[in-house]
Each structure stands twice: as C-alpha cells, then as structure tokens.
Image (cartoon, rainbow, N blue to C red; front, side, top):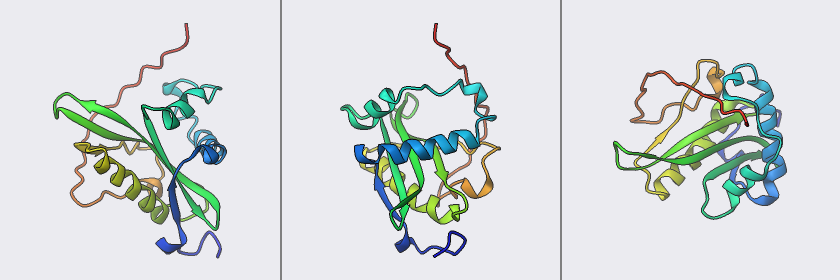
Length: 165
C-alpha cells in the first residue's frame, strides 16, 4: 500500500512509547522540529540531551506520555502530552504537546488514531479536560479534528524562553 492510498484504522497500529521505541520517537520529533523550526524560535532551542525526556516518559512519577503510530512496522507519527493542573477547575488537565504525522501519509486518519489514545489516557488519569493548541502555522491536515463537544477557546499564547544562565 502506498502512503497516498487511504488507510483503514485497522492498518494503523498505535501503541504507547516504550524505552525500545525511544529512537523512533526521537527521530520523528527531530523531523517535526526541523519542519516547524522557524515557528518554534520563540520557544528557545531544543536541548541536546535526551535525559529529561526519557525521565519524564519512563521514570516515576511519569510526567509525559507519548504514542507512536505505525504502518507495517514503520513509525509514521506520534502524539505526546503532559499533565498540568487547573486551579480554576481544581483538577488535572491533559495537555497535548505535539502531534506529528510523517509526510506523505494522510495525517487525518493517523492523527485521529493518535488522538483517541491521548483522549483515553486523559480519562484514565481522571483529568477534567483535554487541551491542545492548534497554532495557525500547523498544516490544516495535521490538526486533530475537534471531537464532539470540543469547544474552541481563542486567546493569546505567550512564550518566555528561559535561556541557561
């Protein structure tokens, strides 16, 4: 099957990232970062070390979660999220940090499968909501379609990069 052909959900396997998947996740996230590097300038540069990423994903208490989408064993996309806390809602929130689908795969189907896993984890963690930002520079197809009952909340997003001293 070529990447341009429609995929059935049965053709896409989405699994939580394990330590053995670290190299595939790092490769996809590096591709993702290169693709959006100009838009990410306000966020500061990515750290060279992967220590904090691996600690957050695999060392208790877990602070990040990620899933890989695969087709025929090939990693074609990922989604990553962290847990935050809302004082106003007095509960934990699940915040999507990154969603990437490798070109030329049809990102809508792959993104939907990835998004479903993040949504299930948010429920499992008893989060009060699932949040994500769809930046204007995101390619339209890479945005997870709003699930039923999702509400768009407009606002401004500020970033203060903290450079090392």
